[in-house]
Length: 104
Image 1 (tube, one colour):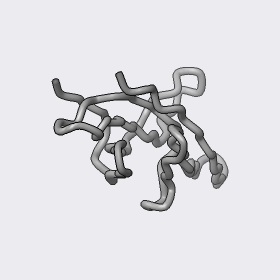
Image 2: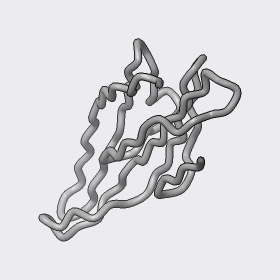
Image 3: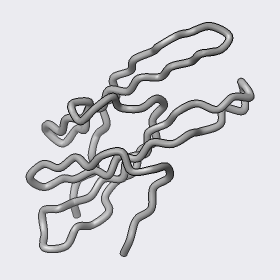
């Protein structure tokens, strides 16, 4: 089985039994009629001989660097930054705590 995530590849995060492909792209907000940056994360169970797709998340904003992700006690913590330039310059940071599903 394969897996697909939107956007372009930004980084790969890996721990002992979990890996995440982190892609960055754009998503449309119909309520505002505006596009903004988004992070698309595909999680994989790498505890066996073959990686298996495990989870998917779509978050607003994008990670700044490789230190923006951390996996601890079955939770993936992600920090994203969202910047707008019009009509005013504004930066918003968010901390996401995502529970990773149990492996079957």
